[in-house]
Length: 196
Image (cartoon, rainbow, N blue to C red; front, side):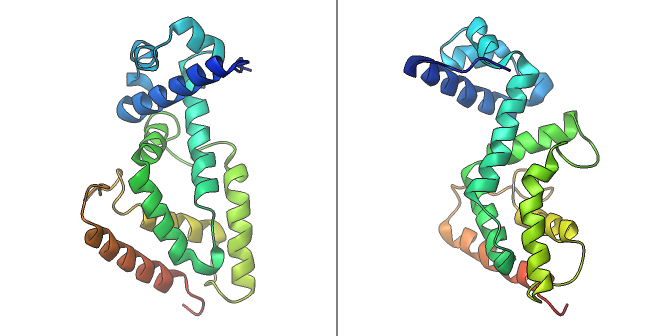
């Protein structure tokens, strides 16, 4: 287990490393990321980085798993309103495009098929249980809860950095985002409503 900082100064360095590494990995992927650039941006040294994280692979793991925790906690599922959940995911992708880029690099460089992480149950079980409960109550259409969750997430990413058509930016006018939110809300509602 990597060393955790014991002082406020160490905690600040630790956070600078996480921030710099998040940007580096999001931009260049696992193979393309360079420790030298990370420590320069974090205003630290390799020895400190390795003391905290062990190696480049474990540094990426720490960042990526933290991004999964963030999306799970910042945008919790509401199975009774999957359309609203999709819109909140869309907004989080605008705020933090690095979250999607990190997932994309993981898919490209580590896990080209199957679940994105081995510990997917940790991130999915609560969501799947909520969808199953909403299905049992007749509020969400029948179907495999995992497939419904995957479809809603995919719809929320229609304009994300992984889009094959168009990647949205937070710098675009608010009315453009509002139109997308309305379309996304309507499409997800229609796709997931009970009785379909």
